[in-house]
Length: 65
Image (cartoon, rainbow, N blue to C red; front, side, top):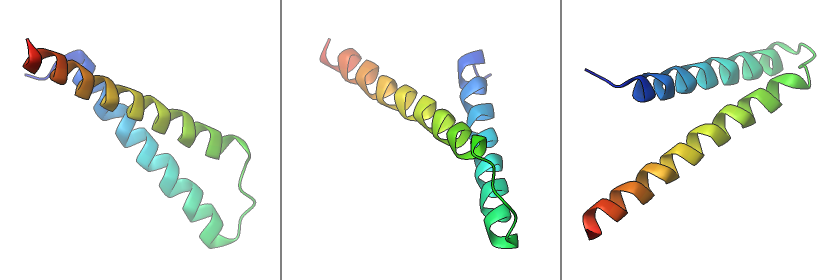
């Protein structure tokens, strides 16, 4: 069973992918892209990068004792 934290990261990843697809779909169709959408994508991407780096740091500390 996945932890709540793992599920939160999964939903954040799926939301970020959906928003990115929406943004590039708007660009492809020639629609006027909103200013908010790229900021949302960057915020979710930053959230995921932070937690990925945090996981690496935690695993490194556990392996060193």
